[in-house]
Image (tube, rainbow, N blue to C red; front, side, top):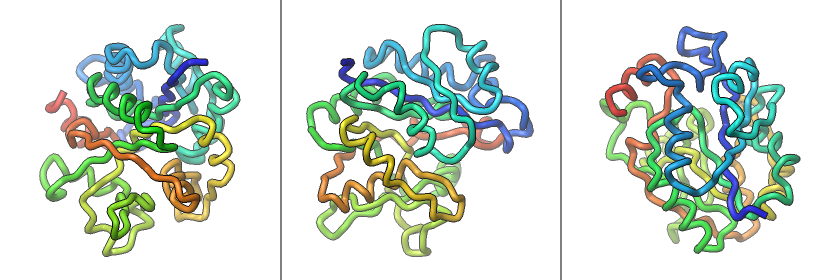
Length: 248
């Protein structure tokens, strides 16, 4: 088996980009597809030679643009990040000991950070290792982070859950440690844990982030790795695309 396999979630359309018919990961960033920056970083990291890309609507456009250097799996409906990883399970069960999940619309992650996250996970032995970002405020270029999930810790400082912004209380919205959705999982724990995800939230989606609460309920410790905030900036709107163009 491979030691670690990377899954890239890339199934969304650019609905908030005034380009609703194009896969978001193919939107041009300085003349290149958005996802190409992450793919280049993964290649330079040396962590995974052949990532698995989860595609959705307009899947054939993504495959044609990126070519045969990657494996692909279809997410037929957009039912959340947890559902996207469920779609990848048949391809990866028994193939890799550990799974890293990244996002095709977050182009600023660096090879060194991918390698650091993988190393922390492989050496730490935890069922989940997650990157987190901490900001002082949500002003200027950090404004987009307000929509990120909040990392909730108990009094001992242990991660006990991740609460999505739309489901967060006013008190939880004050938390400045955020989830950019950079995860590593032990595969033997991940696959059965996915079956415990529920969609009883406002979006009626299966959140990958809910696996943190499941791990905590099982008494499993979650490791965290600090990520430079700029590396976690994602592209969901035209304004964020302009910001990323300045940061690239």
